Amino acid sequence: MWPDCDKTVIDMVRDAKQTILIVDDVETDVDTLVETLGDDYEIAVALDGPTALQSLAPNPPDLILLDILMPGMDGHEVCRRLKADPATAAIPVIFLTALTEVREKVTGFALGAVDYITKPFDIQEVKARVTTHLALKAAMEQLARQNTLLAEAARLREDVERITHHDLKGPLGVILSLPQLIAAGGNLTGEQTGYLEDIEEAGYQMLNMVNLSLGLLKMEQGVYELSPRPVDIVRVIGKVVEELASLRRARGVSVELRQQGAPLEPGVAVDVVGEELLCHSMLSNLLKNAIEHSPAGGRVDIDIAPAKDGLRALRLRNLGETDPGFRERFFEKYATHGKPGGTGLGTYSARLMARTMGGEVLLDAATPGETNLVLCLPAPA
Image 1 (cartoon, helix red, strand yellow):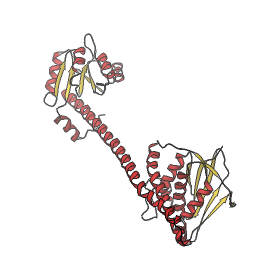
Image 2 (cartoon, one colour; image 1 turned 30 degrees about the vertical axis):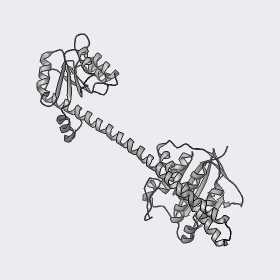
Image 3 (tube, one colour; image 1 turned 135 degrees about the vertical axis):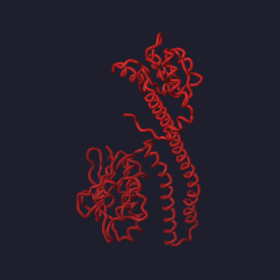
C-alpha cells in the first residue's frame, strides 16, 4: 500500500520543477518516460551508467529512474556507487526492470533503492510512484529543516538563560553583601539583626534558584556534570523546614523528623551522596508539596531508613490522599492537581534531581487517606 501524500506537498513538488534523471540504454523506454513526466518535471537523460555518474556532480537530481539491465556497468553497480557517495546517497532511486523475480527486488532494496517500476511501463503507475517518492523526499527535507530550527532554538534558549543568569547574579551580589555591611556598623536591635539575616537567607535562596535553573535544562538533556560528595541530609532538611516556616504557620502543619519510626535524636548526622544544592532544592519541592496538601493542623513525617544495597530511603508522609486519577501523572512535567496557580514542576524537578544523583522518587499510595513519597539516594560506602 502506498502512503497517503499531502496534496500541498505534492503541489509544491510539481511547482518546484524538480529534476529527474533517467538512466536507460533503451531509447524507446527513455522516450516513453520523457513524454510521461516531461510536463511536470525537468528531465535529464543518460544512456549508460558511467555517463549518469559523471552528470551528477554539477547538478544532482531529485530522483533517479535507473534501469538494471545495461551493458558494461549495470544498474546495481550504479546504485551501489550512488549510495557510497555522501553527496548522492540521499537521492531516491527507483529501479526500472523487466525482471520480476523476488530475488532481484530484494537485491535492489538492499542496495538502497526505494521502489521498482516494471517494464513495459504503465503511465499512471509511473506518475504515481514518481510523485509519491518526490513528495516523500520533500517531506523529509522539510522535517530536516524543522529539526535544524528546533536545535537552533534550543541553543538560543540556553544562551538566553546563561545571559539572564549572568545579569541576575550582579544585583544579587549586591543584595547579599549589604546585610553584612550593615551588621558590621553595629547599633542594631535584635529584631533588626534578624531582618538582615532573613534578607541574606532569601538572597542565597534566589542565587541557588538562578544557578539551578540552568542545571535543570542540562539534566533534561542528560549533560549535567554531577559533583557528588557526602551531604548531611538531616542538616539540609532542617534548613528547608526553617525556610518553610511561614507556610507551616499559615497551614498549621508541623514537620517531624524520624529515624526508623522513632524521633530523631538531636545532633545526629545522616549522610547521603550527592550535591547539597540539588538535595536542598529537591527536598524543598517535596516538603512544600506535602505541607500544601496536608489538612490544616496536620503533620508531615520524614522517616529516615538505614542504608540498604547502597541506597538510603527517606519516606515523606502526609495526611491527604492523592487523587487516584492523578497518580499516574504525579511526576509529569506541568501536571498539577488541586492547587490553583501551581506550575506542575515541583515533583517533576524533584524526581529529575534525584535521578541525576543516582536515586529515585516513588509515590506510595497504598495506605488510604495518606500520601507517601519514598526518596532513595545513594549512601556513602
